Length: 258
Image (cartoon, rainbow, N blue to C red; front, side):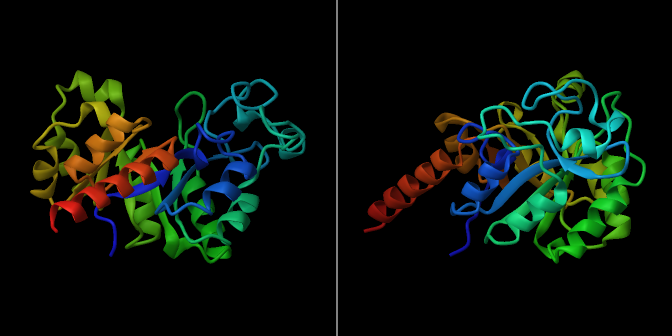
């Protein structure tokens, strides 16, 4: 029976393995999760790379923005806490994920100054088509204009608008305007940080024909909350805990119905 609330291994499972690493993706495809989530940037010479931050240093050797460096320089940099793994290209990651069952949840990122990478949407979709993975992918972004472009270039592809925490709080934590803007852009799902979701938010989104998911559900209480609210999906750094909570809930529900 399909899950009601889907589980996404965030950056491949960032509290289990080094985030956005080949190691993480090879392990994550063995889990019974629905999605494996990862992030895409572009080098100065046009190579698409999988890395969360717009600048180097936190998870990888090096310094400075990815957008200002060439692939020949970047591919020699080592990811922290790995056995010498280099920074992966999008093509390498897609090759790994193509071997697994989980769907892909790909976030299109922005440059260090928060400007968009011109043409990154088109190039990312082309890479997915080349690897025959477009139909297994949901595209996410914090910029609604990015998703408008994705919808225009790949009609029917699932997209999710990620809502920025500071922006959401400053606007009074009202979900309906975000759902309305998403629907107008052809985007059928939005996602909030788990701690910001309120009891009626899912119903308010549904009134606009938009689903509601959450992100950053990294511990058992947050994971339980996501399941209890029946959100569309959630991202988690601990997919193992999410699967454990789901199993325990299933056992409890089965026992209750005997």
